[in-house]
Image: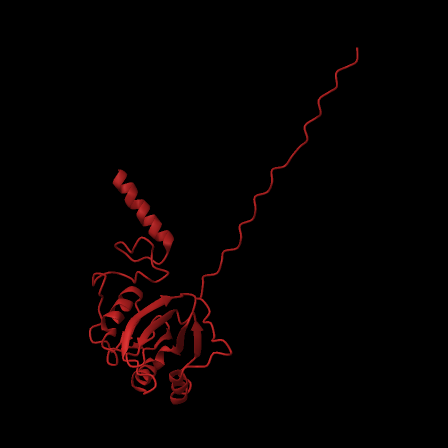
Length: 214
């Protein structure tokens, strides 16, 4: 009788190597400010601002139909007074003041003022760039409506407004630690102690959980 064929010997296989973790992405520094198209003329009030205050405007941006004037925070009063009083501008209403936070930048805050002219019915945004502790002059003397708006930006971001008539928190308790809308603020709040290192925060939370179980 012929011998039965031997089964094939198993082929040694190696487990596929785990894919290497991609490098950690760098922290964002904010979206680019889009320049206006080459064929888009500047509004007269921006051209007159640049002529009246040389060097006060760092950049002009135009995006989805809106103009933005980008300035250093040190020039906010000069620019605000011109936009309020210049005949071709007449921005007599500050409808909003807000901010964004980009910690990797030296000038981490973008402070945005949304302005409207009831005379001409045109709008503009002014974006002032400021460092964490840099003084930013209050515009409440130019637009009184900015009073509570600046208080909210101070409360949420800790922007160092100076010259404000009543700079105190408006949403959080007066003794609250930290500024909740900063990107480096602890996601679960400061607890009893504001900790910059997330690992310290997790250790404190774990210790409290273990104490509750015991």
